[in-house]
Length: 283
Ligand code: PMP
Image (cartoon, rainbow, N blue to C red; front, side, top):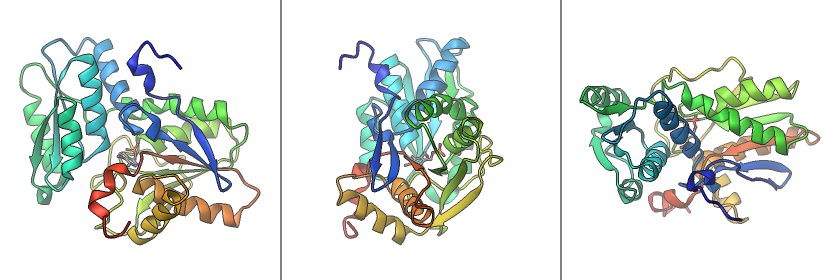
């Protein structure tokens, strides 16, 4: 397949049927996660509003995939980029962001996301600096109108949607849009059970403005142990998915067992490759 525009490698991800559960594989996006869609949408919205110029520096606070995605889009569109992250992120993630040419600033983990956001807001006061702020940027959920349309195109019928909650951008828009199309759709949000967990990407320590739970029917919490068990099941069947995907699979499997005739789709936000170093002993 020939692509003349590199950015067209974001979106249009495949859905695989795995043991009777449908999995939308967002690892197929250019920088490897669902956040590629959001990064592109947030930056293209700024371009349309004439808020970026050739001297602009794009800033974001993130502990992972969003930073990687924004660094990638900035590399393609030639904007400078600063990613602010808590200092407990893995060296791998920092190196991926740096490889795209972005600068990384580490803030103390113990001061939390609130501190990192305050830091970013202060930095954004500088001339030509723009803070994207995925937690309150409406273009985060809006990026998933497209995700929903892709699902509608591929799935003639759908009874359950299972989706992790980080910023909430994905679940907020998918639940709203897909419920309009599939009457009776049940949307399950997935969060980590423990306060201190290893399921990267879900369970943000703040309540994001973009999170809209109006169309979410139920929240299921998954322990790190259960996520690892599901991670191993998926990987040993050829699907090396991230831990938030594993948590979603854990929930999806239970739903399918209790409702064998229903169609269950889960969103897999990324692959498991980035997480292997941190969990050597468990894998
Ligand atoms: N899983 C992973 C691995 C992620 O990086 C994210 C984004 N933080 C999510 C799930 C949740 O996506 P959202 O921010 O749209 O809720």
